[in-house]
Image 1: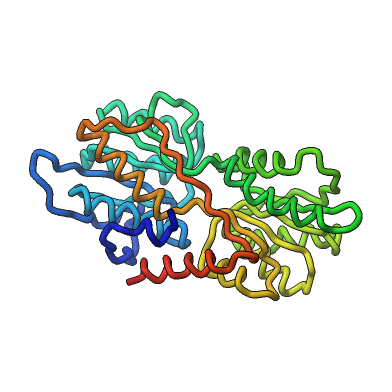
Image 2: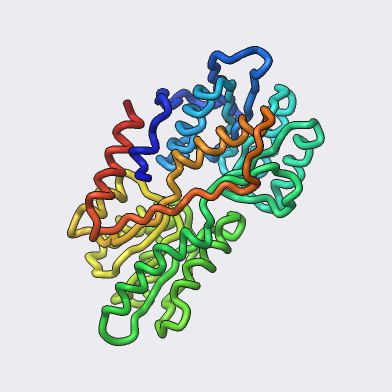
Length: 328
């Protein structure tokens, strides 16, 4: 099923107002039968990327369809802020807390406090180490996500003469996705002889640019570089353009800018594996509402990986059409 075909739910405008100190936004209400009324507390990282904007939009659309009230909190990528947002949702008396744990261990304490108040916990994007806390987990398998684009990178370097050289831009260790994405990427290269030029850490465009420059200083003709999120990949692409390098770039999580790079023959970006964030957000709320209302739901809801490549421009154009539909 294509991403555009998936969008059957009504669309609401993206929230643009500034959050409060702990990131709580105004609630979105939708009509529902009083006995079925649910209040959902939803945590997202921030509204500074299209990934999280699509997550939020999917959640809002599902909440409207199923007649739930949804309130948003921003953890700002900080554990103390995440904990404070959870406490505020507990105080507000939400029925369900949906969250992407910042740290598989560090986020456990606040999630347990919510659970102890009989609040259903639904996790998405990342997982808590204690699997007894969340009733459901929604998202893409991070190992599979990284392996998908890793296989595409492998196909390219196997077509090149001589021993290939590879650079890696991984997420910071605190990020719960760091290890599975790293392992997934490396699994795609098993049995392949190559030089690992350097492994650097980045999550933002600025750090991604620094990371690529670091790799190219060590080996200017590096064959390919893998970046583990949209921010680091976008930064690496900008740095590659400035350096006028032929190094090919592969990464995770699509954005409008990355899609346009895939359509640009002069760009270094060759392939991006995407988590379909709108779908993740929608399914997270849909699963939470149905489960809370007594309808059996799978413990793990796996969202398939979507791979975009330079060699298949139509799929990239479909993605851009998806973004346009979300902005209406």
